[in-house]
Image (cartoon, rainbow, N blue to C red; front, side, top):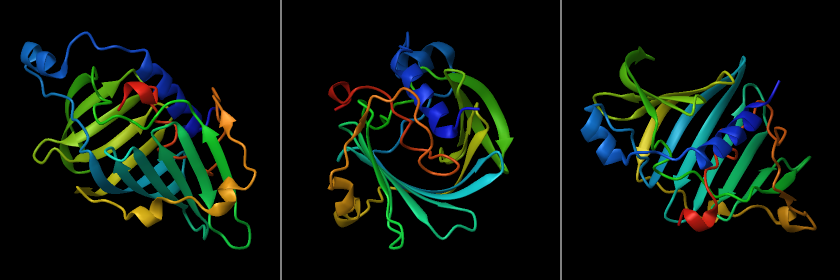
Length: 223
């Protein structure tokens, strides 16, 4: 069975080759339906993730103006924190800082971080009560279902077709992680060759990671 990271990589490929026939503004005008949300260019989200019973705590830092995205992941009852640091040039650093066993994998995906308007062309499914919130619901390429609170337009949940779900606990628009925290450890650059253009990547983090494989289009077309 494909891992969550593999499923999300497939999503990125589908997003690349699924052009929308209407712009967001035109689509809203024609259908009278809510327009799919565009992510704030900078935000911090604290989330709980669940993949077939494997639970994770996730800190997501999204920083589109600086071309970077950071997922800080801790599995349930696990003392090791995993870091998934992504750059818009397609490079990801997946590492731990455990002094007893530091690890780092450097991957060149060939595509940049997810764009703010990655939900362009999503199909509106109506409204549902999810996690005790009334939400507008969109589906993208039959792969992800995105729930946004009607009243505040805050993201509430994301469901992937693999069964991987993400519940948003807090969402801070405009929050930015200090630059010093975006530096991968020195051992990531110590003879660590990049793995390039991997069509299906096995999970480097037990239970998968939300971020690294939610890639959309090549860097040259995003910024």
